[in-house]
Amino acid sequence: MTVAAATEEWIRDYYTAVDAKDLDTSLQYFGPSSIMRFANEEPLVGRDAIEAKVRQLLDGVRGLRHELREMWEPAENLVVLEGLVTYFRTDGRVVTVPSAGICRVEPSRWVEQRIYIDLAPVFAA
Image (cartoon, rainbow, N blue to C red):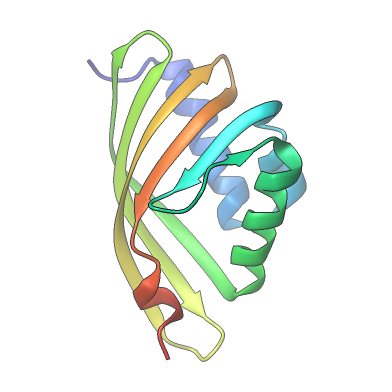
């Protein structure tokens, strides 16, 4: 049930781009009709909507780091991710929160990301 090597490679490359705050590269992993949903927020449909949300998130922190702990591929084109995300806040504080994702994929591209993470501690006063 582990992830195919090629799938793991592009997923790690994607998160490397996100952690580098390289929005142009990370957006290449989404198609024009891809969907992203953060926890209980409304789904973002399409690359433009995803770009706006991710830009807002990246602009709100000095940096971030994803540590992927587990990846499973329980069915074709379905990947489940578990990890920790460390956020480096603009005030110098560092906050690490657990995250999980249920993702539909096609070769080297996200079709849909459902990301389960509590961002409240990251942006708390």
